[in-house]
Image 1: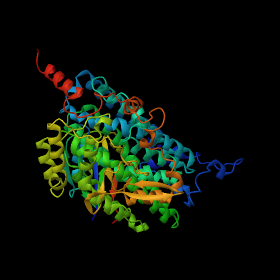
Image 2: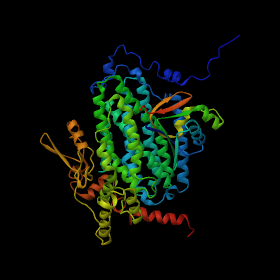
Image 3: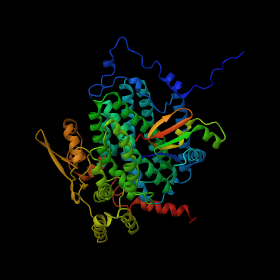
Image 4: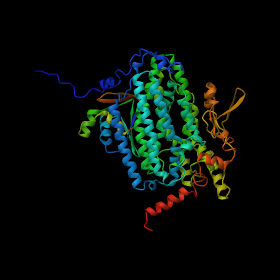
Length: 506
Length: 89
């Protein structure tokens, strides 16, 4: 008898259909608008949620299987790192500053993204969207946890790692990414998806994770490259979710286009400002560098971004409003930000330094139009001051941008010799901005941004009252250990002493 | 034509996968960087399960790619036999 044998394995599409089947039931005793109260006020029109499909079609059984595999790999390497003096295998202790920025400023962002996606998994009506957001929520929490675990090994030996949770809320350079994530999480669900799913994941994380993590490997940091690539293996899925979400909105109704474009403009610029930190990590804080910030931007910003926006042009999307200003900033931002970190190094829970002659030669080669002309002379001047025993420090309070919260350290797009500052008034109060992009964002939603908590005004409030030592206590900064010039720091001395012990029997 | 790419960790799991991608996409360019490999291709790139299985010598579930994938670019289309990245312009 010719019997039809049941297929042993379900096809991917069928498996995914079964996973999501019956999850999207029609409610009978509650109104859909009351179950999902936040999906309409932003103005986005959705006609058919079933049109949303996750292109990876990842089902829960596969998700747990592959995530478990990633975790096993991760913890095997973290154990090996701890058991084999991994903290002494990095190129030199300057590299630690990049890790401190990562832990203080970026890992808490992963956690915030986890909270955001947990909320979106509840608020979106579509089943495909709910499943994808819930998986991403779990991913983001995993990223925060694996990063904290991996870097806790460094905390056993070096300064500046211990108070990252306080730093996240209170330290001036950490409020930049914090305000980015707070802004996203307090937006509506569709704007959140553009902010994190699209702008952050698709347009920007490649710059944050890929060349920097490859750089971590180049600098011998087994722990960071492991959490970095383990996290990034989830990002491919996140990026795809972000891109699918944007296409879904644009395909559902042509009226969505101007709203979506406005969010792309806003969140590209918000993200670009956060990348100021990353540019400095890449150009200055990796002792051995795989590529410069400019080279990374050419690949992941220009080439990939142009391809993306060309693809979306069929829906009427154009490149973000700040695209040209971003391009003009690329050859300047890492230098301007590192000069900022150095002049305020008494107030950073990481070390900065004057680049060596060798480093300056590399920077000049990578930035032929800007470094020797604008930045080498400043470093040489700062070097002279230090040699004379009068290290340059700026104890004045920085003017902060009300939107991105960065100090005014960047210059005019068309004149790198002039600080960019903008000013606006709202309800009789004066507000400051670092750029046209940030000013426009504020002017579109002033009621949101006037509520921003800014680290500089806090200095004059309880419990600090304008006292620098009280501020250091409050942010968890141990003066003389966590802050200041790398040259002469405990981290530098300990690393050199311990590495010498590891290679001799004396 | 816009470039699509896929980046994978450098390890023993990905060696046969990369070989398979190169066989199926003769136009692609393989960039080797510390700890990672980035494969660029003009317009589109296809990863085929069968070719990976031939290189690997065992059955392979395309979703295993998730374990060692670092990043990708382009619109994704996936079923059990192929994963395609494509820009529509």
